[in-house]
Image (cartoon, rainbow, N blue to C red; front, side, top):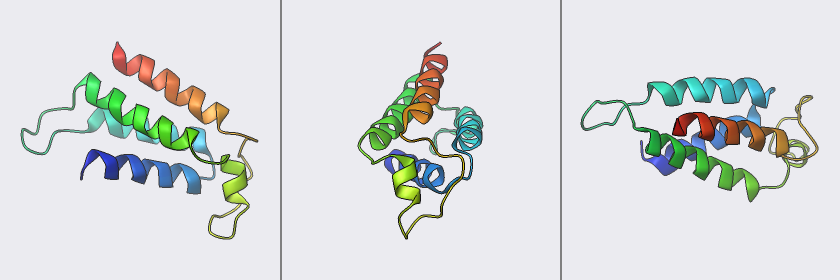
Length: 100
């Protein structure tokens, strides 16, 4: 799977998740286990950061998760915030940890 496809799949999962923080924890664990297709070696820190930055950019350019969950195409979630700030804060922390 290409990086852009992976990022979009994470994005879609966040949109449909009942609990975005729990879903981000699952995504973090998946990132820690990702390997490059050709070499079968774990992805490096810079690749993790790029994935998280792309996910962050997607979220920043999207209306709030609450607004999306109220539309007909997405299920209503009880745990959404009025904006994406808590999800973005968690992604920011994940990026900082990935850079270490």
